[in-house]
Length: 141
Image 1: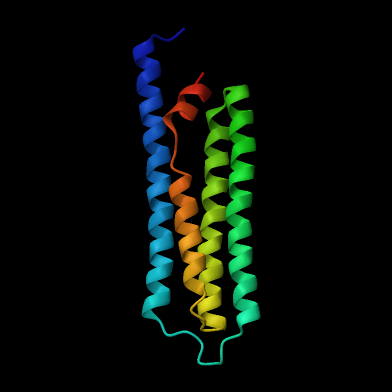
Image 2: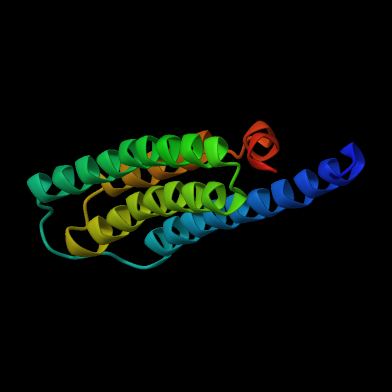
């Protein structure tokens, strides 16, 4: 049995890891946006249907990220498994990042200005995925 101070230190270290992962994924989305702003996109006439399909896919990925993360986090807390909790957060982060990748794809393929919606959706999703210390505390054995 560990004393409360040791458990608190474990939680702090693990939570800091979650925060670092979250910040790095948010920076990744910002770098993709910077790439889209800095590199010229397609010269072709925009394809609004493809652009809207990519934005819709980006939105769907963010919604799915919340559903999957919520399910994995619930299971991790029930099992008291911090590794599964970390996996749940990483899957959620990666799916949000994929929304930004769809925006980047839209920028380079169609040159449409709709791609900024994908970046906004990805950033909003990441902001809403901010790690919760309560999850780490509940999953720590």
